[in-house]
Amino acid sequence: MKRVLILEPYYGGSHRLFLEGLQKTVAADYTLLILPARKWKVRMQLSAFWFIQEIEKMAVEKRSFDTVLCSTFVDVAVLRSLLVSVAGWNCEARINTYFHENQFVYPIQVQSIDVRQFTAINLNTAMASDSCAFNSHYNLESFLGAIQVSLKRATDMKPLDCVAAIRKKCVVLYPGMDYSSIDNAERHGDKRDEKGSPPTLVWNHRWEHDKGPELFFESLHGLQKRGIAFRLIVLGQSFAKNPICFEEAEKEFSQEIVHFGYAETREEYAALLHRGDVIVSTARHEFFGISILEGIRAGCYPLLPEDLSYPELYAKEFLYEPGQLGERLAEYFHRPVKLEKQVSYDLTDRFDWKQCRTHYEKWLFGYSLEKA
Image 1 (cartoon, rainbow, N blue to C red):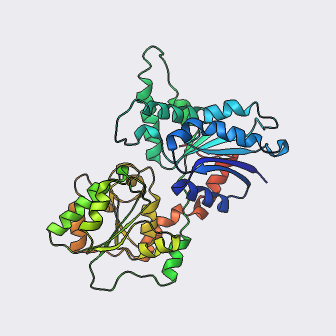
Image 2: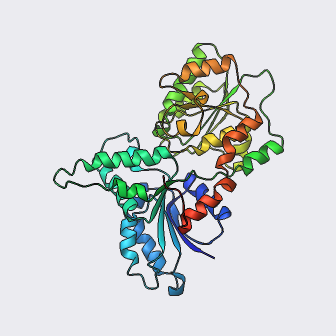
Image 3: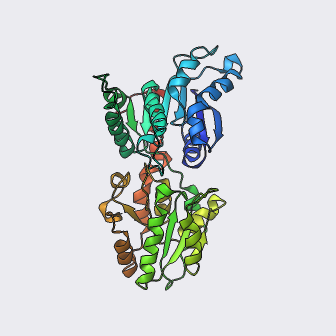
C-alpha cells in the first residue's frame, strides 16, 4: 500500500474536512503531522522547519514515503531543501501541494508590504512542488495571473517567466464533500418551519471581513424597510475579534433570529441548515465555497455573487450582480422558491467524495491526469 505523509500546519476548518474526507476515500497508509489552525503567518514562515524536526523523530525505517501532501501554509521550497539531508528519506517521493487558497488575491484590511513575503512563499511552493491541485479554476487563474503581474517588478531580470512551468504541473480538483450528516438530518425528520411562517435566511460563513457580513446585514435592513418579514439563521466560526456588525445584528434582528452563532456539532449544524429556505453569500473572497454546498444539499435556494468561484459552479439564475442582492432578496421573498430535493442533489452530487476518488488517486500517486 502507498505511504502518504500529510503535512498540515493549519489543521482546522475546510483544511481539516478535506483531509478527513481524503483519508476515508483514498486507500493509503497515512501519517499525519499537524498543527492547530491559528497564527497562519507564523505557520507559513516556520512550519517547514518544525516538520523536518518531527520527521527526524521518526524511526529511520519509517521515514520513507511515496507521496508528501502539503497545504499552502507549508513553504515547500524550504521543506524540500532540508529533506535531502534527512537520513532514510526517499528522495524520489512526490511532493504535492493542495491550494485551498492563494495569498495573492486575499483581500487584506490593512495594506502592508509584508504581504509579498507570503505571496513569494506561495510562488516558491508552486515551483518546488511536483504537482499542484487547486480547488477551483478561479483559484488557479487568479494565482497565475497575479504571478505574471508580480514578475513585472523584476525590471532588471528579464526575461523572467515561471507561469508556464507552474501551469504544466497544475490540475483543478474540487474538494470532495461528505454530505452524510446533512442527509442523515433529513432522514431523521428535521424540517423547515411550519407553513405560513416567513422564509428563513441562512448565512453560514467565517465571521471575518472577507466574507462580507456588513453587506449581508445591510441587505436585511433593506428587507425591514420594505416591510418584508423573514427569519434568520447565522452560523459559522467566530473568533476573539469579530467584525462589530455581528454584535449589532444580534440586537437589531433579535425578533427574527432562529439561531445566531457557531453550531457545536455537525448534527446541530445540519439540522439548522434544514430549517433554512434561502442561503446567501456576500463573500469578497471565495476560492470554492463548501458552506454553500452544504446549504444547498439541505434544500436552501442559493443567492451568490456573480464573481469569484461561483460562476464556474452554479447557473446564472442563482447569481446576483454587484449591488443587486437587496433586489434579489426582495424578489425571492415576494415569490419564495422551494429548492426541490432532486435539484439540490443535482447541484451537489458531482462534488461528493465518491465522485472525486479516482481523480485524487491519480493526482496523489502520479498517474496520468488531465492538466488544468
